[in-house]
Image (cartoon, rainbow, N blue to C red; front, side):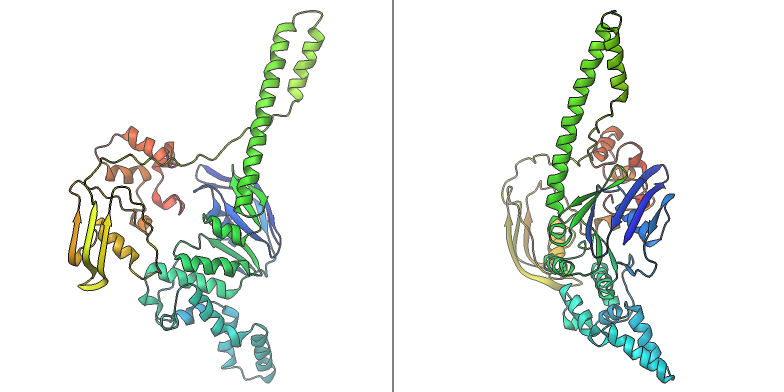
Length: 433
């Protein structure tokens, strides 16, 4: 069992937690939700002991094995399969010791323990996890150093799942996964026998894997039974009830004050007026509704352009003169809405970079409307941010001729109000970046 009791934690001037309390029983699966920057990842760091709360306590059995996905993806020369197998440190240590142990009793203990933890099935189990996350048998025997950062993060996730920790902490595990791998992860977590706390913005993942939602709001941890859809419905009803109660109470307060003002100096009604004043003093205020501010997206209607916006005819594109995509034929018009699907590594990002003008075609014909303006948000856009620059400085760099007032208003729509716009990128959460 995990017990979080009355914790408080502050980063600089920002108070992230205040008297926050939560109990997570063994084998429960919990989804942790809240706006970007509210402290979800910080809570994980508090649980693992990477940082300590300013007050309060986090209690659990010290023998509890906690699993988190490494922030740094493995990049050594070991094969993917070896990296995953070595994540089970107990099995790895026992195998190493078995090669040098000479005491017959110790040798028997080692082999007994290896049998207990299912050591002989470990390679097939590790291979199955890697396969579910998109690595075929051939790739599993390649070195991690040959993979891109996103693929290495998949290996880190596979290693964490292979360890079978008692408490599994997953922070946005689908960030580097394609659709097929997300579906596999959903099924894997649904069968998971340990305790899980999952941070995710994926509605389907939360609905299909967790039994309760914990909402981090107003520095507190609020528990809701069910999946994400249940959480939304219950919270909507709760907010509606709070609004109704608060409105009703404010009307009653107004009515009482009006009575008091009218009769407090009238001898025949003075006692009643005094009684009403005491009633006001004893009245418990109904909770006012403080909703998380929603991000406001605005997409201005572009000027009409002659069709087609983009046309591709027998285009080839790739890297260093080697084609990755062949015979591309496509026409894009003003009102098109296109979803690009396919397994990782099949060239989706390459194709988008071609359309955005970040890659040149190797052959074929690509035409664009003369006044076409393209907005491009890359898969790893956050990695292009400068750690020591602020949110405001980044926007100013992109729009040097725009007024400070308009830039700050735009940042405010995305939650960077006031001094938050002057926060350095290094101090922002992953979602805020």
